[in-house]
Amino acid sequence: MSAQRLPETTAHVRITYQSWHHGKLEGEVSAN
Image (cartoon, rainbow, N blue to C red; front, side):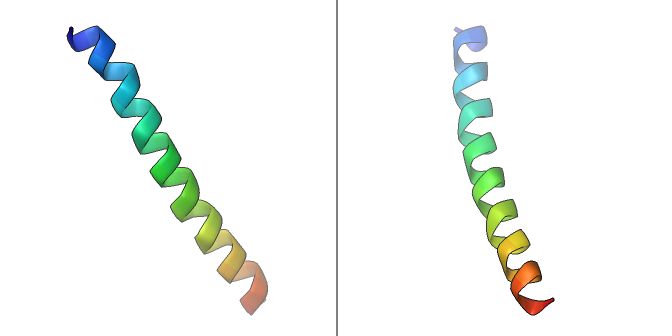
């Protein structure tokens, strides 16, 4: 059960991190 829950959490965190990182990168590029 824990093993099955691990990939789900990783995927969710990865999406959130990617979205936040993408937004920061876009803002930084625009400022530059």
